[in-house]
Length: 255
Image 1 (cartoon, one colour):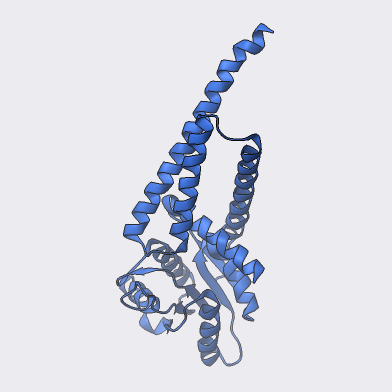
Image 2: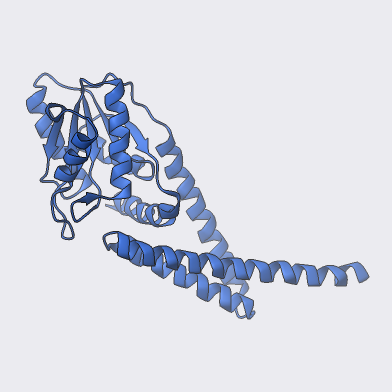
């Protein structure tokens, strides 16, 4: 019996440490929200991340004060496990590049532009397009994205400028600047490419790794069968990007 009593303080200390860790994670996520609110365009993803961060902090504090029911712990563990599995599912799809580097066209999906400057996520996509161009300089690169409410120019124009400044010839770039969603990215890009390749074309889609699964699914719904390349995501934006993407994928499945 003595051994059990001796182990109890160690268990209590371990749980207290987990309490503090949960609160610390919540605080770090709030710091990320604050940074992205200044550096990026505001969207529902930031609101969701801030709500998630506050929920973690409140949960950690209540747990520390031993005011959380056992059922709540079970629910939190279940939700956390499901989120980790979901993230793994999206990351798995994003890590499996399928480009053959002999495609006729590259479709680079747009992302946020801050004023006239491409965001980190969009720069990552464009850098992959530049790498692809080095292997297959004959492919047409379609930069796809309209102008959002917090953007001074269209995403397509910002993307075109980025590529040209880094050595991609202007005659290899096809600009699609009317789309406002991923589905429109594909529909409008496909319309432009059919004009360039009346007898048909092969394509590779470039987007961020967390977005690959949904992008490929939407491309197929638009009648486009394309290979894909996933662009890496900056580590400190992973919680925001994956949380927002999980919400978007669930919405896609439901609708």
